[in-house]
Image (cartoon, rainbow, N blue to C red; front, side, top):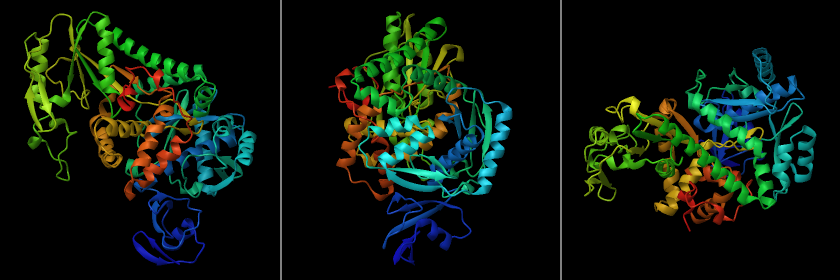
Length: 542
């Protein structure tokens, strides 16, 4: 039959699958991923006539998630072989590393790390096939029960599905949400280090330019994850299956109220910290896209107002240079996320004038004309005033270079998402932020889903340059994720999926988002979502 492989026509035997095809065409390549007709494809699945096939080796950008999942499987398999009565929980990422711990939070000792590392090397050398299987719901749930996967049983038992995919490796069952490499030997290298009480693991991918990067601790971020995980554990909602049970049992309002109270407590703590330092007169709020910077700025201003302060909110967006002066990126396109897209000189002069008690006419940027104007009224601070600024670059020292460090209080906010799908499958914070942004951009900025998806890669690249390198300069980090939010925004996301026909380049992303959201039970009681919730930035205020 005739197919197209990496943009070249090929004649192959009927019944051939992607893995067999890869070994025939690229016998020396470590092929781990396939995209067929613009969607990720099971390597063990047969190809059909006229299919458009793209094959990718382990260091390709398209293989990053696959290699991370394969690393996770090898690590879990090693732990199962060495400690059959213990269970691993994959918690969250720290830079290029994954943080994992025992479910009972017993510590890993350094001697454990050496033994596990040796076992992982043995598993990779054995090159066990990673077979993707499918069985009836009843059959697979029984296999999950026998393997001790209680959280997987809880997740799937309420879902209306007939079949469940799973993986078999060396006679053991696994469940991963997404594809893996065809065998354990596909993993070329890895690193494992103790990070008390757990461990961090990593492998080389296109994202790390083929290198094993040194682990860099992110102290504040790790502390926030730890606090959020303790909180979800107290509620007994660490996984989506447990969240779904609350929804099924009619406890949606309780979950909404407690999640919002938890976030409000974080804001209250920030306000208390600011008031403890009499020198602070500038609060800087930074975070990646759709992390909740604007909502935090307003809610923090309320908390400070209750404490007798007079907050003045300033957005760095109003200090954009005129559009014809915007710096260009490497492709010659305007780079609106670059630091020098902001008039740094004017911004710093205005901040210092305000701090010194002088009146200032603040700028107002007109996004239609692409030019800056100025407020007709003057702004002036008194002894109880405090400035709150929010924006992409607010932790970059260059943004506020004229203001002494003693006068600043810096806040980093992100949707860190302590909720997991199950013990072995974490929820990516970037996926949550993408969903937030897609819905917000459509409902309030008039942007199609296609436009948001087209810009997302550039947004993420900008975050790597302009935000993440500075996050440890913050005085405090906040988690803006709401444990219930995906159960609310699910229907808004599906409205977009139904409304738009996406281009081939985004087809696989939409398919992944659809597959991910199907595990959440819907929360229809939106009236319980507070009017000042971060979620209102996406779903509106009605």
